[in-house]
Image (cartoon, rainbow, N blue to C red; front, side, top):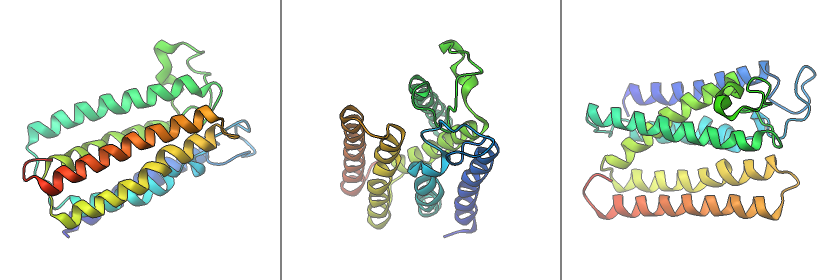
Length: 213
């Protein structure tokens, strides 16, 4: 692996550390920070997708991919636009739940005053850093999907995302709706199942076809 692989892995992990630092300053890092929001349901430290996923699993994935990525500049631009839109709508979707299930992304609705047209005002600083990280990670995932990889890397990546899905979807869903309702459990497992299916399909295509994916 080249030096850039280490730099990218360390940079991506470092972004998560900075995100956590701002979460601490915003009193959304853990329950009951003395200067913070004691009604928080999903603090930064309990979001498995961030702590185990963004901090450990994804940097490792970036490390093993980056030396092999072969994507034209014009496609990187397309990947950026698509990733930005996906991240924007994913973060927007959490605003609906923030009133009843506050978390480090949306600790409250004070800035928007409940106006859905300016929902983004309620994103905390750590949430904006999370947004930037998500755009970058989606771009790299798109690059991985586009670029042919050898079987060893594909299998490693497959297992990375098999583990990533439950800690990024099921665990936060359970924590944020604790005690979890039947509806929240079913929803979380359905989303996870869909994502696992996508991982399986992409893995199959990359292993048994020589084009792009």
